[in-house]
Length: 231
Image 1: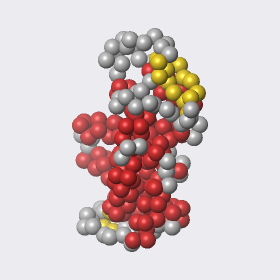
Image 2: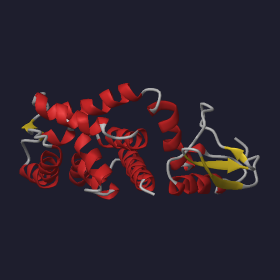
Image 3: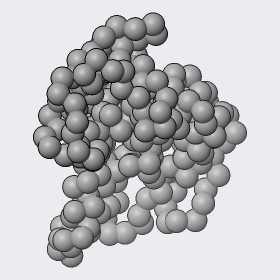
Image 4: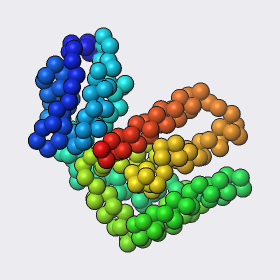
């Protein structure tokens, strides 16, 4: 898309802040009003639009993408999004451990167990780990507690949480990122632990490395989005 605007600004409006291109209110891709909850997020989105040159490149605007996802997808489909995010508690990445080799087993225990302990303390939700890939059911009380944690988020934080879950494969990691228990680099290291071990053991695959770089960047953008929501 060619850049056809000259000036980018922000303005306070009812319910929050909006970005304006040549004085016109920016809308989402679905043409919904894009009212942002904090000035910090509005300024970040505005900066992305202002940084575009002759061509507007949507992939270079992660804050705009996450904001648009919130308005166009999270708000109208909130119940389904909550269901999808909460479902990760039943198959959380951190609960499925290797039984060999010892170096990988030890690395998983060191990186993953503290987060399971944290989520047990923070949400009264004890997730039980197992070895292998055979499904281990979690208790109804634990699943209900983690669902309440998901339901408690407003639409904007739910958007960030959903993105973090999809990137990491773990509701525990996503909640820890949301709460500031870990940062994006830690979230990447924890959720990509198995892949990192494989690269160290068998060598780096170029395609896998590119995919991992994308996940790392997207987790960083998600963390920034969540922090901007705090103002």
